[in-house]
Amino acid sequence: MDSKTQKLASLIRKLSYHEGDFVLSSGQKSSLYIDLKATTLHPDGAALIAEVACDLILEKEMQLDGVGGLTLGADPLATALSLEARKRGLFWPAFIVRKEPKGHGTARYIEGSENLKAGARVLVLEDVVTTGASSLRAIERLRDSGFSPVAALTVVDREQQGRISIESSGVKFLKLLTISEVRAAET
Image 1 (tube, rainbow, N blue to C red):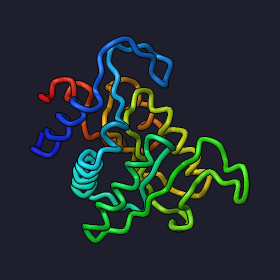
Image 2: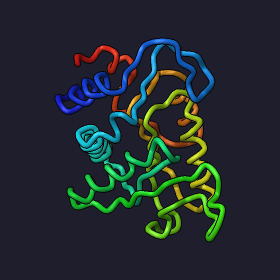
Image 3: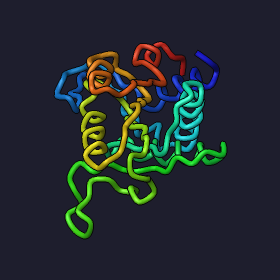
Image 4: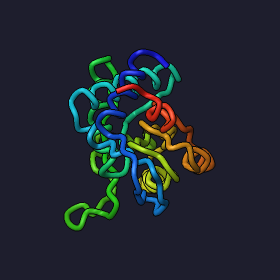
């Protein structure tokens, strides 16, 4: 793990890691909970996530036309990564996948789609992956809207079924950290 990723693990451990009795969005019970919004909405956290994610995407030589995911967890990630890419001379517009279609006006699921061309290669973002259900929902909505999800990237992989579920949908899976790495991080 490089120094930026170690710093990110420590920041997540400090701001977002909790032990106790929790029910996850998947309905599963867990003694560990990562409330990543405390990190993704922190200026240092958002910047660091975007740097580490951009480094990984470039290392993998992925060709992208946009970044985003299911609201709400992906929203700050998409904006931060889009801005980091722009600093590096790349154009990856952010988009948001709604859980329900807009109730008025365009009635669409994808916000920011006017910044993407038909068939755009997009990266699906998620803050924490357990089962992968949020990423899969975003992937389905994006495909239905004529876009091409090429990969899903999560900040923290809970090391459960998520990776397998996402990969079985034909999309690559990328992670910045595992829950084990966050748990082991020094604060």
